[in-house]
Length: 243
Image (cartoon, rainbow, N blue to C red):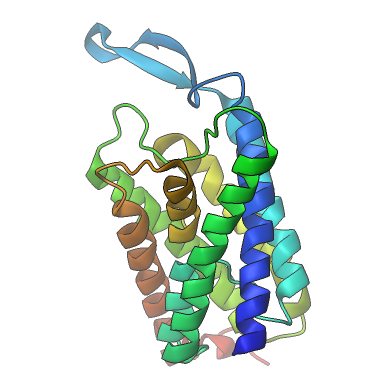
């Protein structure tokens, strides 16, 4: 457990440094992910997404996860996410005790990674997860839930399920996060990870009144994915394509 905790802590720190650091670079010229404003329905003013920034941020998160998960895959599993730890516990891939220990170091790693970026980069950090204008708390919650479920399902079927291609699972998992971030970054900040939202909020001493959705949403997503995975196992999905 100690080796896994050390690996998970260091891996989470590195994942956060490159993901959050890259996000901060993308957001240096702007105060948000929105650029121009245009007339929406009933002549209301809405913001248009800065798709170049969204793509850059999504790449930073997806690539950072892929590389660091590949590095630490044989050490701690390369989870870096309390919601993923919960999902792994639910399917029996982790014991509850190890899951709790990894969750603790993941949260600590999120804080450490955000603190390092704050210390080594000039200017004010712009890496907190926030809802975009017009996105309700309920919408944000369900976006986080479904995107995390997608990521969790990729992890369960590519990594937790052992096969000949398991060694390249981190690539598929990183791509899954990349795709999820393409949708999620604009609306919710694309957390999918309580440690990713909690770390910057602690370092910047700023918590929104809806910060809880970045814990509850990913947790619900992990539960949803774990339930679907168990259903697939119960249906013996391995036999559907024959030997």
